[in-house]
Length: 192
Image (cartoon, rainbow, N blue to C red; front, side):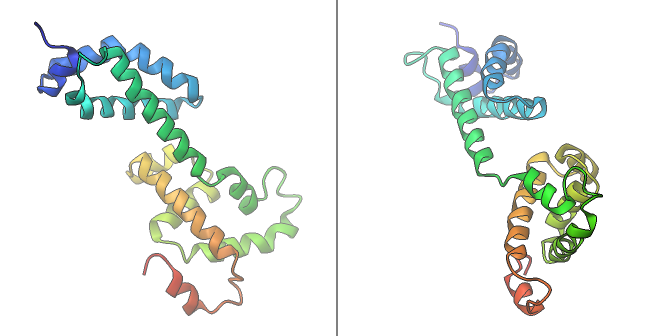
């Protein structure tokens, strides 16, 4: 009896990888498209699913399920995990609006100038990589993909720095950074 594509992947057959992609690409894309609307995120999700399939190919047992069922199960689990991670991320757009004033910010520049200055001041207490990512996003208006390309950081790392930097910035903005003791902020800073 010949081996399945997943069994051949588990055995290290490089041609099986291409065959698996050709055979199951449509299935994986259709599953991912149901839950992800952004094309860049869709591509990332499909990539994660494929990697997960390679990692778990040795667990495939044709006596328990078909290859398509096994791949569908992995894809659904990865997509659920991805949705859970996304749900835990801070609302990026709301902080962007807080820091930049949102649409029509020129009219509110005088009112928001003080808050913007506090936010910019608080950013100096972030880790350097978090500050760099947030400055590129908030001040230069770059997307996470553009930041990843220009800094040679993986996209996932850029997203992590964004999330951690935003969380830390929110914590710092809850403290009056103009009157707080700088040593206290430095002691609480994550880059110590």
